[in-house]
Image 1 (cartoon, rainbow, N blue to C red):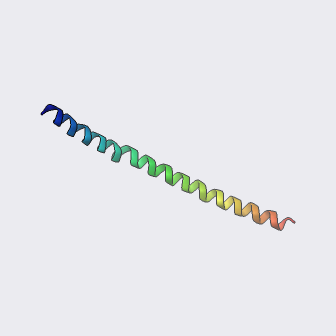
Image 2: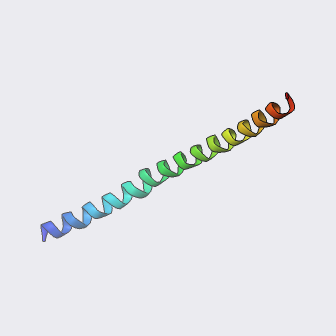
Image 3: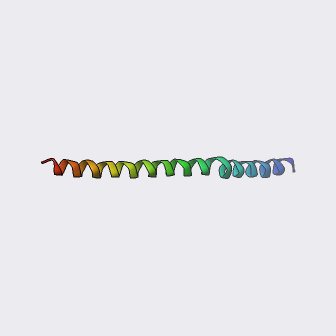
Length: 55
């Protein structure tokens, strides 16, 4: 009986850690990567346009 209680408590704790810490951190990293990617594309387009007009 004690093993079953500890198993259920462990599963609940693991789910709490997953949804409270891991998923928000991953979503924050994805959002940061998306923002950096958009900035990189904008810089690339600006540099390409400036390079074409300089010729």
